[in-house]
Length: 501
Image 1 (tube, rainbow, N blue to C red):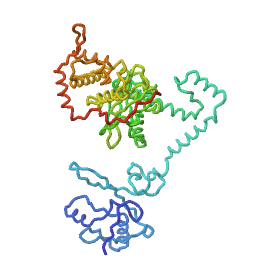
Image 2 (image 1 turned 90 degrees about the horizontal axis):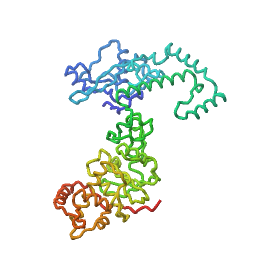
Image 3 (image 1 turned 180 degrees about the vertical axis):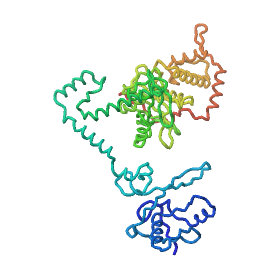
Image 4 (image 1 turned 45 degrees about the vertical axis):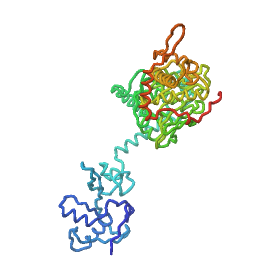
């Protein structure tokens, strides 16, 4: 009669025996090799059957593992049908990996008597084994005399807690709160038992001591730049400047941020739990541009106030002149992202006023450090001027510009002017015509021409010199950059200028 093969994870007593199957052929090979460790493992039910058959036999012979079939029966026996037998040691396989990469199993013997919780007579997993936790079954089952005495002592101390606060005590607490506000800790006396209050005081002292150790080790710094690093997606970014995060977060020295909703957290564990529940995979608002994996979202500061405030706090870590943090309602935010199979990852953003009397098309602009020097800054600037062209306005960034911002804008204005001069075929050129076609402010055009030494004053007239060497240099750079696809395509923009709000 062929042997029935049990499915993995099923056994006669309802326990998992997937690692305890018997393989006679493997037994033969292991014995012929002469190895000290046997690979064959007998199931718990089979071992008990063999033990009961040996007890009933007048002559006890050691079990033989040869080419013949084992002496025990393959009939399935329930636990109620089994005779009471001595408890056999349970074998738990512990996987180890050798240097060659192959996995081997080291069998460790533990008795299955007792349970770590003390509520059960037996255990069926290594996590519930008392011996594995260096305890005995009796120690887990009943508390020691010392534990009982300590429990009685705590219960006696907690009986001394007052039933409630008197009217005088409430008035005293309210007066203390009105006098000091949040600058001092509230009065804690009579709120709980003296024992619990003492435990709380000890925990406070322990936490302050650990905080001082971290500060001495340099993990927490004092001064203007409290936050040294942030965990943002798969990147760890070093901050450059101070940002006015709440003090309880700033003093940690390290923040953990969700790269989609920009919520900031204190620990990796909180971030991991948040990511398991966060449903955001892209910025809120309307997607107004998409080409390939690059998208731009228009976010209204009035409709998505929390997101825009978190975005401003994040930007302040890398900008020196930024002063806007919480008053985000009068602004629109244009967030550029790069999409993959996990979501839309933040590249950078720029903000602009909904109603700017000076025609500023950018109030604040930022490229995330992990995307710097890759052409994304110029894409953001180009997109801001593309919106100005659709609005039929001439735009300019809000002053003052940061050092990196000035370098980026000067580079962009230079490319715009050289492209215009390269395509210009006439003899007379007008600054106003350049401004109307490129949407760049005339003041910015003149300052860029002066920086390139292309604007001269001769015989009472201003002349624009067409320097062919600069144009040839720009053409060579454009030829190298043509494969990078880091340009904005006006045909991919689906946007109408918002009405005054």
